[in-house]
Image (cartoon, rainbow, N blue to C red; front, side, top):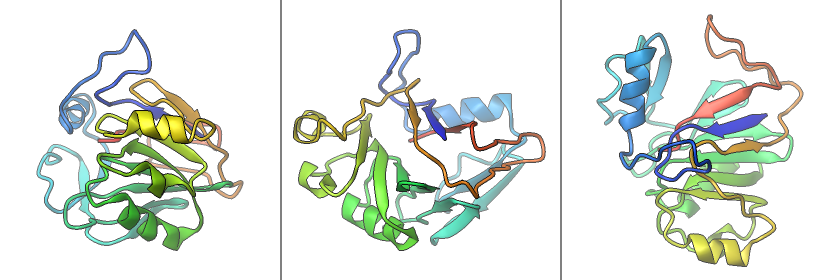
Length: 190
């Protein structure tokens, strides 16, 4: 499975422009294509233009092998993807604290890695992860990179990260698009 970071306030490629707005990419995306289904926190009002949106308060399965942590601390949800190596968490800014996010995701299985903004996450709390890809709002990025060089992956818009997917997964996100086992999974980490 390839995970492509399409929106972030840092850029992994010189031909892409970073953006500092946490949800601005969604409104631009919906302006181009609103024929999608979104799973959003109950407090989020920026998805009214989507064809379908589902409020997510509690942890739930979205598709086979793809889950939401639900609203954590009433402020943010994270996406959890099952892979052969374990659960990969795709976080926004990790405002609900990394310990809380990992605890919730670990109910699905062993957590393999994290991709996204890590805000004020202390580097020591990441020691049990095998993949650490901090993006935008990560306060201790240099410390994380120094402490875990073999686990660290530089993030940013345009970055593609490959993680082995479970053989039983065949993602079918909509009637218009089939994502096979070798497809890109595109997400917004904000």
